Amino acid sequence: MDPILQAVENVINNNLYNYLKDYPWLTGYLGNPHSSVWFICENPSLRGVENVHNRHSNRTENLQWNSHSGDQLFRETLTAYGFKSGDPYANTGWNCFITNAVKEPDVVKERNEKKRNQNYWQEQALLWLPVLQMQIDNGDPRILVAIGNQALTILDFMRLRGLVAPEFDQIPHYSYIMKRPDRKTKPAKGSRVTP
Image (tube, rainbow, N blue to C red):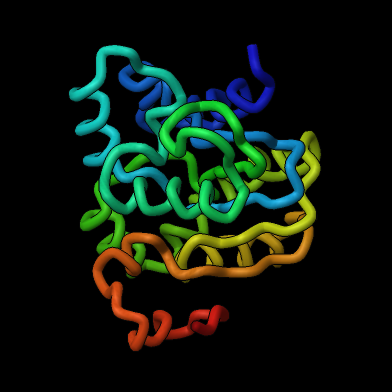
C-alpha cells in the first residue's frame, strides 16, 4: 500500500469518519509529487465528493479536483500554464502536485461554521500535519502554493507547529474567481497575490 495513503488511514482511525470506505478514490492528493510546484487546498467538499461519486461509475483518484466548474477552471488553468500537459481532465501529464492540507471531506457551509472556533481547525491542522510532512519529505517541492486564504492560514499554523516546508505563496481560490470573474475585482481580503 502507498505509505501516504496508509498515513491517511492511520489518521482516520483516530475516531474520524472513515470516508475511504465510501470513497476509496478520495486520497486527498493528485499529480506528480516530484514536481517542484505543489498546490495546497484546504480540504475536500463532501457535497462535491458525493456528487462526483454518484455521477461516475469509473471511480479513480482522477475524480479529485475534477467535478464542477471551479475544478474545470483550475485544471484548464494548470494546463494553460504548463503545470499539466494534454487533456486537462485526464490523469496524465502532471507537472505539479495537488494536495489538501486537511484530507477529511466536510460540508463547506458546516465547516465554515465549525471554523469559527479556532480550536476546531487548529486541531484538524495538527492531526493532518504529519501526513503533509510525510508527503513533503517523500516529494520534491520547491514552493507550496496555497489555494485561498484558509489553506494559507492552515499552512502558516502548521509551520508554527513544526512543518518543515519550502516557501509558501498564495493565489485566490478558484471558487472565488468563479464568483468574481471580472479583472477589476481585487483579490480576497488578506490575499498575498495581486492582479
